Image (tube, rainbow, N blue to C red; front, side):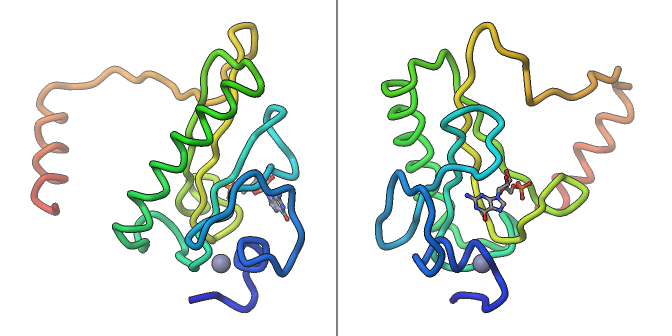
Length: 138
Ligand code: 5GP
Ligand code: ZN
């Protein structure tokens, strides 16, 4: 299903032009308009899902396979040294377009790290409680 007011639905389905690197019946992969690095690619399913949490399994499996294909093509075309695959869910996580997408971002050995987080210390008892609480909800 498409969503009328969703820009990525329109791009994925070809109603708005984009720099497309790949297309099949399920996906369009396009260059990001404001790339973190040259070649920064977005994988957009043609069907609308808000995010990872609401997407179907078939789309998710196929998206990861496509991320591998795009990553290999970036490595060959751009001679990058590494690849970040990034996927944001919800505004708190930095998602700005609420249509499921995967970022596939070429990285270079001499470049800045762009996916970083603080490394907090952990408490063994608290870790056990958190693990149990997540496990109970699976
Ligand atoms: P998010 O922050 O939601 O994970 O990522 C959204 C991404 O979409 C951003 O990197 C942003 O630059 C990109 N973007 C937003 N609007 C457009 C657009 O109209 N065309 C393209 N190609 N990229 C877009
Ligand atoms: Zn959409």
